[in-house]
Length: 332
Ligand SMILES: [Zn+2]
Image (cartoon, rainbow, N blue to C red; front, side, top):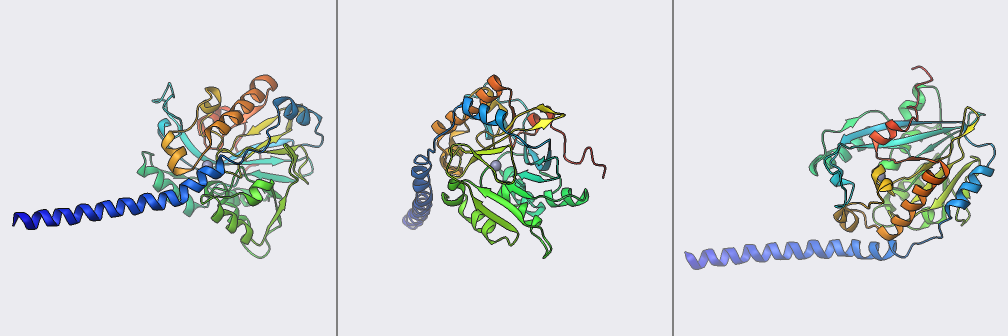
């Protein structure tokens, strides 16, 4: 009996070791190339002075900005900030935002598109498994725009992750869907990893999306959307872009920078803090040295040039930013 039990135990241990080894090999198969790639994508970053000057010179920029909170979920700060976070117990709410920029002539550009309800539910369920609270699925960009009789003329993505892109599928629903301009920096059009390639393929397959590659510039203005610029941030994903808008509200310049996932909490900018090491190593392979350079560029734009900084996933900071919710001035 005892030798038989020992043999059974040995077999179980062997199976566990094989499963673990296969798991590690599979992870390494994806992770190692992605880590090597993200560390090799370092397009030149413009200096804060260059960004400030281009935005100050821009004419015909957007005159309105609002945001849509497609879904959100209470999440521990330890899920989005590294161990050096001095205030880990403070509340944080991870939201999936879409920003709506509007021009005097009615043109409308979205910065990211959030998720469809179905995708938001499954994304939120995964968040619950790692300490998040129940997910609130609020709305979608398609529902919000149609509720107010509006449409989007274009969408620019901070990066091609499903939580920023999925909602665009509904904007392309139906045969009468409008054409949607989708400007992409060269890296967003070409440099992908296992976290973005599938989303890019989905985007390419959408009948209404007109993908257009921008020239390879350190700060490229979006054709058809004057006063909006993208810089190739990388660091989070090879295709990550930071978007800058020469917004004028009530005739006054109120420049804005959209961080995407350079940080997921405004304290990433305030304290120059990276994300949790496990996240950057195993979930989304990141280059924190590069992200640090982008964080400091954004902080300098805010502190020295008065840009508003809008962090895609930080609901509390977005609510404190003074940017209104989309539809607040439209009636429903
Ligand atoms: Zn994200």
